[in-house]
Amino acid sequence: MKRRDTLKLIGATAMAAATSKACLSHSQENRLILDPAKAEDLHYIHRKLAFSIDERLTYWYIRAVRYGFKEGVFTPFWNMHVGIIYKLENLDKHKYMAKAALKIFYSDLETGELIETFDNPYTGATRDVLQPKLAKVSRKFNLHGVEQPAFDINSEKKTGPVTRNGNIGPAWIIGDDIWVNGDVIYRAEMPNDLGQLIQVNDWSTYQGSMKQVSDPNLMTADATHTFNDINTFNHPWIGMEGVNAWSISRGFGRKSHSVDGMPDTWRKLTEKTHPELLDDNLDIF
Image 1 (cartoon, rainbow, N blue to C red):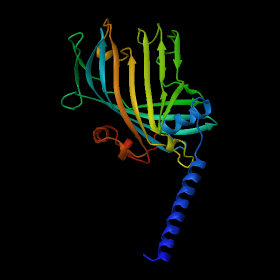
Image 2: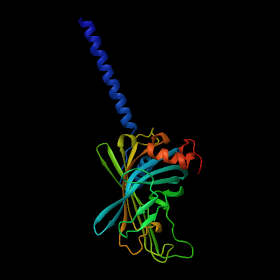
Image 3: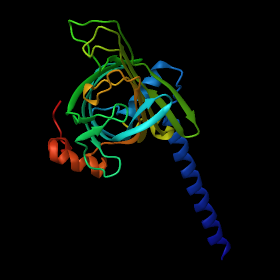
Image 4: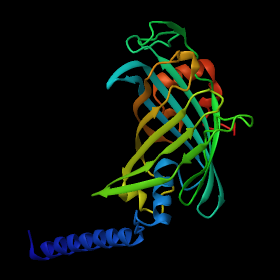
């Protein structure tokens, strides 16, 4: 290779490297410096992972198994196919409403078919299954978390002591991975509509990329979800009266912004019951 051509090649390579470095530096300069210990940053992290900064539709699925927990032993009951569609409405700085359409299906652990009856392993009784109806709920979020809980089981006539906790966080950053908790806790003492202690512990942990979360040009970040609930049995049809056991679920899922990102099983079941949920231009809120 001639000396002149070699110098050209070296010059071009150096220019490309400098350009790449400049782009990287510019990109890094634009990234947000987020501190999970600060309430404003934690609020932003949670919203960007769980929903979006703008008001687009957000789709979440959860694939879970419902268990009974008695005397230290977990007994699997059925599969849960959960789809949640969120629509956000900005209300003020650090305040927004998250409206949700929630559709859950229970299926057999072995066949995958929707269950119609349930053989209660604790009582020996066979119960008719009430598949969950389409639910529409709203949660108002402020700087610190849920301001208006989704749970309000008590009626006006039965007002036993009620405690709630919908605080977000903490969050953890390890390398490019970021996790944040977004739990909803509800407890209703007697007297209440079910005539028993009502305890709901919905534990959600969202995981994503710090590069995406800290990029101000992205209105949402890709995220996965691990979910557990540890509850009293709050559905009378299961037939747990007098049984000292807890209801537990263990699940996981992913966020998308199109119904195409939802699992085939959920979409096929939804098509038979609520096909309107499969429209990306959904307007049921």
